Image 1 (cartoon, rainbow, N blue to C red):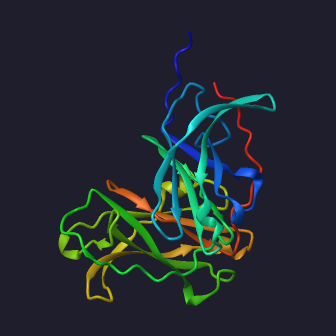
Image 2 (image 1 turned 135 degrees about the horizontal axis):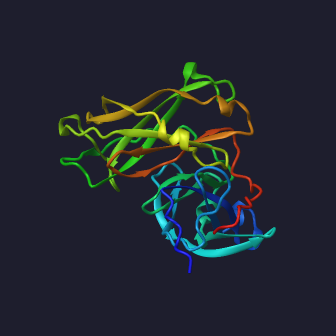
Length: 284
């Protein structure tokens, strides 16, 4: 009997399809089935056939933070003479996207493994339309166990439109998870925040993950007089979105900090269009 293969240390987690029940349009769907593949860090290899990781589906509505909502069920796919695993999330509630003002954002992570994921937006309009920045209701008095990391603005240099901008500045706020309590400067806790991105239906690359920009904190004053920290990422390359077929997704992570991030979509009105699903090399 062959010994089990080693657990991957890094994996790409790619949502391949979001399939509304009855094959109806976004504006008519109440539920959908979602399928994700796990793919080697480089190349097109499937993970070990006998690997049984916990694969989680995260979801967010509009500019709210994403939270895990389901654990995937593994099944084996046989196609084109190849055999590899997939993870299914069935009967996912997508009814909020029936309202054209709403969008639902999905991504997948694997417990205990560095995950390079893609982002799937289920919506009539996938763009993040400049929302009103969040106004803190107050500040935390101690370091929170987890935080909501919200990108508040992606500001192209010189106020250029998406189709002309090459660089942008990104600003994010942290709140105690599930609250609007921000991080005050006197707490003397300024975690390291990193800005991540993926393009179109592709996963974040290993190179982008390892070189993710680190935010610089500064103190700002909210409309209610609350002093709190914001994190800035300057001169972020957004030139890919000059092509109307491209969109860039941004989100934040924290070093040694449990983060629930929102996702910002920078691009023209282009929801995730059902791409051709990948055919992986057979697992072993």
